[in-house]
Length: 178
Image 1: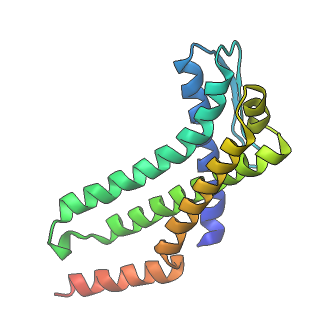
Image 2 (image 1 turned 90 degrees about the horizontal axis):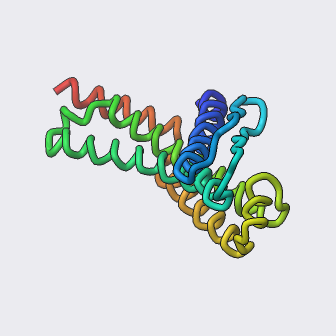
């Protein structure tokens, strides 16, 4: 399962991260010239002119963690609203989708946090632009540590992918056999 999910999560994380740069560029009056989004390369968004490079560069990792996290939370909220106290409504598809979105949100937090946190020491890619636009290293490191910690917590409380999906199937069989 992990072998299948890892490349999908990687490409999805890059897509959401670059979407953040695109939104940041549009919001500040920048013009997006090109978005490089190949799964076998690091993604990139070229903005020219870029009137607010500090805003554009931070929108990538911020949207890259907030959007997946918000999507998971909305899915969780919708499931609670739909299901109420009725276990029959807790459909297996809802639970599996919620777990996958939670796993993806955790992956995005860890990847973006690691990229910005470690990048603060290497000053490469987005962190180089962050440095040039005046972001202190401690801000990048703090962002990285908070994101990685939250991402690992999401994964840890998720449990095993294999066991979790097996448990979902068992619960589904028990609920439908009543």
